Amino acid sequence: MSTDTTTRIGIVGLGTIGRIHATRLARLDCDLLGADLDAAAREAFAAEFDATTCADHDALLEAGVDAVIVGVPNRFHEEIAVDALEAGVDVLLEKPMAHSLESAERIAAAARRSDGFCAVGFTMRFAAPTERVVSLRDDGRFGSLSHVHVDYLRRGGVPRNGGWFVDEELAGGGVLMDLGVHVIDLALHLLEYPAVVEVSGQVRSEFGEYAVDDSASAFLRCSDGQTISVETAWHGTAEPSRTCVLRGTEAGARFGVTDSELTLVDADPDADPETVSVDDVDIYDREAEAFLEMVAGTRAPSGTVEEALAVQRVLAAIYESSERGRAVAIEEL
Image (cartoon, rainbow, N blue to C red; front, side, top):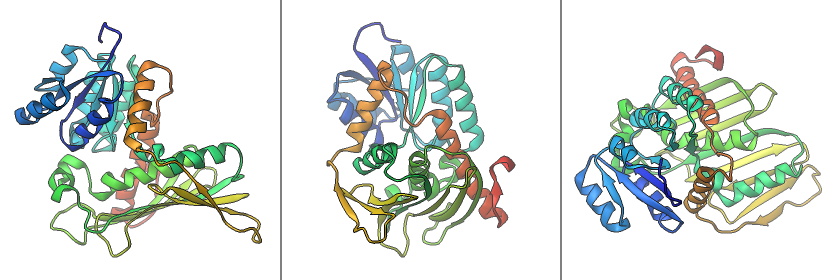
């Protein structure tokens, strides 16, 4: 833990997502450090951000940081997160929490023992339409929410021409682990994280020379009767979409995560739909600001380890349901 008054943030993994975080944090009041096994990545990061860099996360922790952001392949989340948490350092993990449910459970156990917190970067929470819908929900505009549909569909959207994202050993799965995880959290977040009791899902690998899934469909049943439907694809025969539709007893809403407006539909069939404008925001700016507030203790962690573990259980249940060809109870996992 650092002894000066400036928050020191260490970024582990200096690839695309690590540099996205660094670019946003560099605008804020904090010191940046970086760690990566690749010497060229360290050199470029040090030059761009005037940052101290280390060859691995152990050296980064020894250098003294208040928090770490982990942006490495999913399989390596556990080792870095557990070491940081055991050192009392706060952790922000890129989604998903881990490559497997068992690994995620070990991270959660370490977080419960730690003086630091562990959060997962579910960035769709920071989108302007999402924040407006949460505000409307809290004001009672929707009444009792009953169902949420979410999708995240790309056309020709296998990341980075594949890479570790299509390596099951490193990623833990395919599009479900890459994109589906975002919208599953979004739906549960809007419903205030009810307990998911049963999952029916199907994963497919149709368009690439890889073993992991490139599309998935799922239906989630919650303990209080609320339901969630999920569609995700890297490359499918559908228009690209990042859409959320929620239904309540008083009203419903529809929005695209990157849209500048959302549509409200009243329960009264004679009422015209209402268009609500929202601010244009950068979700990574919002995430960086929120994370620094969490580290400072002025904001409660978002995307908590328990919420992320609930998402990981859903991911595991979708794969299990697809393999068994039937619905799977969460308690079966």
